[in-house]
Length: 315
Image (tube, rainbow, N blue to C red; front, side):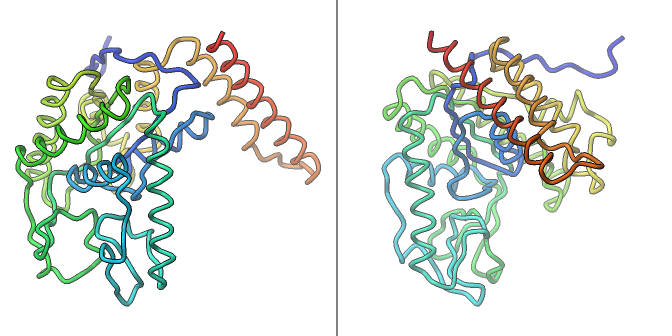
């Protein structure tokens, strides 16, 4: 007896433990990237920090592809320090040179990762954006600047589509064989209102499906649909009734693994997870020396498992 509505997922990539990933997007993409890191996978993510809107994401991706770095003219000074409208609030400093070095180092690292990436994952959160009055460009973060400096918009499909179609062509020229996976974050942006959230998500879903049909090597992972249909119960939400619970994220992650990784790699990742749990386990009467030995043993085992998997894939 089925107690939910299963979402079918087409298997369009055959990733393994040696696959090199890049990832950009919302807080949900950050959760997924952390799970990859936990399992020893190669992932470079979010050069601007967490970003929800497709337009600043596309601009950051284009900067990385063209290696067009930031200058002092891209920053602005506030009481909180120097900031950038294309970056998350975690990128800040009271010294502009320090901030420039930080954001350009992250951008350069992401640009290098793109050169050898096998799979790029982009997760959109919302189509509601705040366009800066002076530049008319949608920002990644308003950084609590005066509301009169921005105008709120539900960004037009045509504008987002044109920008992303162009940047995907550039990415394909840079890395012809790269597989691109889009998803829409399952986190509802209720601050705009539930009806407005549905309008936003519908626009994002239409955008990614248009891109999958028009650009080769592009696929869609239905994280939003899994949350809305398979996990249609508030027990799968955090206490705020908006964000997916740890269990929900785990289920969606498992569906992602089943859809995109080979069976052999899934077995390897399960083995790594067991050792990772041993590494994180806290013994009730464990001495400091025993704790060090346990963690060292787990880390060595994980390194051996991943080395063995890499050798098998290369062979």
